[in-house]
Length: 245
Image (cartoon, rainbow, N blue to C red; front, top):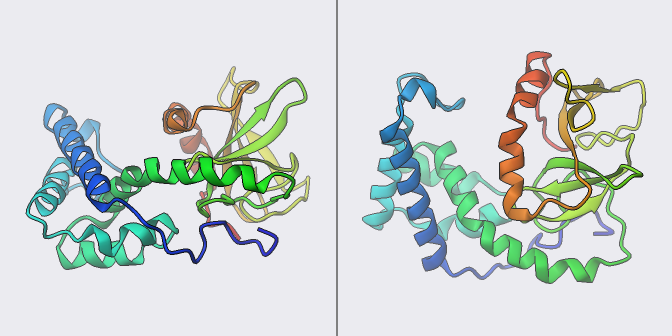
């Protein structure tokens, strides 16, 4: 951490591949079922061209898992360390949608990552971490939280659930502390509950919610979805969830 590296960096991670693969299969089935019951135009995914059907893409991944053509052992440990390259290569070789494959794989890995987070976090007591990416797994912060009466700012990892304090007037994307570069956007009537911080220096943004207590790790994805309109607000102004610098 003192070298600005997350704790899982360069480690050989041991995973129960059967259990993680089984969870990925169940997620693919659930995804497939949702799109079978819904009109495609109402649940179109942003990364997919209009001619692609998300339910059909999930079916292809499900079949590849069931028929054991998809070797999850070749990419699960790398995804846990933030490297999506091997998974993308496997998806392309099997003609599967790489973004959907990554989404399902990352969610299947969350239980393992959260367990590692629970084990490793006590070891970091007293060590400061002023980065916009997770000190455990290296994923970019999903959300910011303003806590207690003092509105102390914390960043949260959507992958492993890690929680770390962060400077209030600093961009989580580029680390810039220029007050003139940071602005806040919000929907009408929501300024105190949720908003989005945008940076004129790197053109990145971070969604921030008010929370007196830490959001449970399993609820972070729910909060991310509940603030989806803030993504549209920021992206409509030309900001993006740019890579951490």
